[in-house]
Length: 371
Image (tube, rainbow, N blue to C red; front, side, top):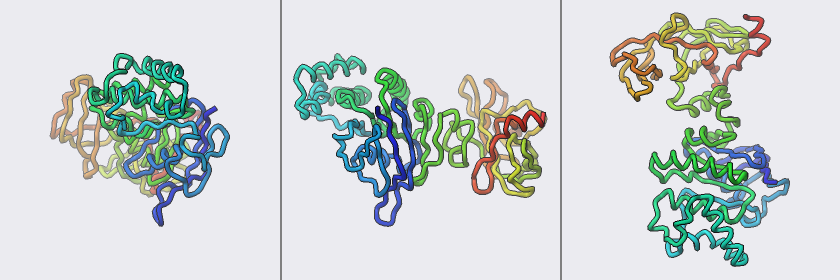
């Protein structure tokens, strides 16, 4: 079993706190992605799991065993770094076999393991070549193959696609997903790219300033962010966040007046709020309804980006300098300088209080009573 448990893990350098009381359980066989902005502590957390750095406090258990004092080799963990770190004077075969040779594994076992990993990664034809003759994607496969031959209990990936071009990143995301299905091994993947997180993860761990903001399946974080930070980080294009004030509260919905003077309803339990409270309305660009006649807001269009199948209108909320992005249907006639009326769908919009905490969706029983 490769269940990984972090209990109250912290990391400090002098008076600077890098990780602050991290509690996390990763189940055997899960693909978990750590995501967050630069400096949030995600790579430090990965290195602590690997044993490359010591935690200042807390416990790390792998398969139920406490591994705080275990060396990286003793933990049964393999790590793939952002830089491929391949030995330039060795062939692909020799690079992949190196760790097994150091462990004095039998030659037949080494050969079998290397060729099996090469087959999984589709690099069998590259085994006699040296790294300088390979493309970036091929080098990345070799680095992964070097980890696979060790048959680790947990794979750790530290921003492995950051050195690749955009097209190759898309291809390699598919390769990582396929690799996880093939190996059925616990994988922890660090990235600052929320698209990678959304497409790869069974669960996403969102970090900010050394703390876990939210943990959940990609769609859970997209549909039900706990706070403003998660809402703003997950989703592309970014969610629209518009300031307003509560003009009606209740257990099934809230009404919010925006800077434009428009009033829109949101399907949340706002009973903890009070009339006049400052709140933030969150609406994703794809959730606006340009044909709605109620619960609308007014936007001034500055630029329209046509992508063929759809378009995005970029502008600002009328009466405010708050930026706004709206997804439009393909061939929508919007042009720069136009004023759009955009409907807010109550059941997809989000509402956050003055502290940035999300108001929850109403319970099903309350929704039925309201209906």
